[in-house]
Length: 185
Image (tube, rainbow, N blue to C red; front, side, top):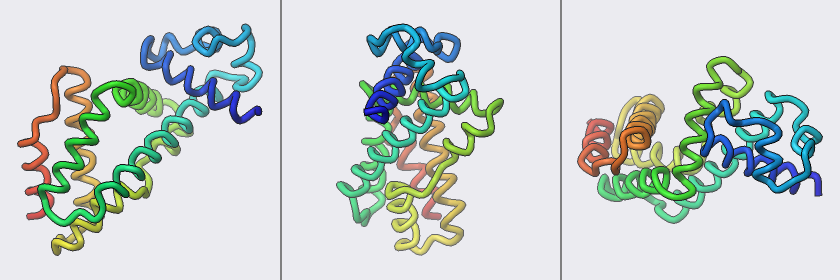
């Protein structure tokens, strides 16, 4: 029961952060968003740091679940076009609907992690099936320095998503094609 309540509050915190930004993220705002009595969030997350940590853990869980599902659906990646298709799908998901809200929260948390190393530890890219699918694709295509190229490729895609989140529009397929081609060189 307590873990369900913590998840509900973390989801509400994610929504508050997406809608109101880091300054709007308060215990009271989360109580209101979760339709809970005043003080509920404080009972589960005593401090702002605890609230941010709970939110980031939930965000990472949601992201990892999405990446695992996508990787299972797309695996194995055989061609550059399949890899581009997967990246385009991920970019679209991160720029629309619930994915957009999570992206807004993720980037706000990333900026906050500059001052809160404990958040950075949680947000640091970790091994997941999505990253592993890209890594295996590059290995299968004879790429050297696979770890660095995987990191660079995924970081560049993340940068394109951030750019479009801020400026609007979709990530151009040609940009993804160029990134994949560069990773394969």
